[in-house]
Amino acid sequence: MTQDGYVDGNALAGPLGEIFTAEVTQAGGRCLHCGLTLALAAVRVYDRAPGLVGRCPGCEEVLLRLVRTPDAAWLDLSGLSALRVALPAD
Ligand SMILES: [Zn+2]
Image 1 (cartoon, rainbow, N blue to C red):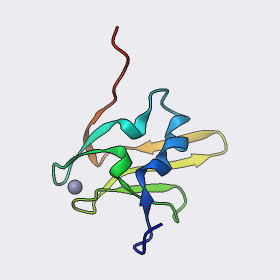
Image 2: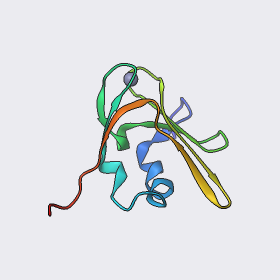
Image 3: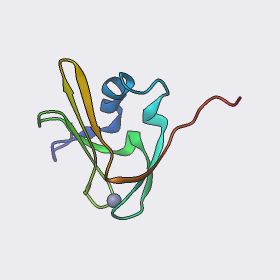
């Protein structure tokens, strides 16, 4: 945890691992707001809200939100203009 109240994007590994079968912290994304291309592990994750909020390290805008309820996960990726997930070659 930093003094600014966030942890790094590796905190997303477990919660997103419930949704995606690929290793998502190694995934790349592009910020919709400033165009920064980054690994999800570089996202600033604020975990003191109900759920997780991931903010861009370049411009501080919200990239993603993840809320886990007892029987579902709500994932908002609206702050990302693209998400690249590496998959095994065919
Ligand atoms: Zn940004």
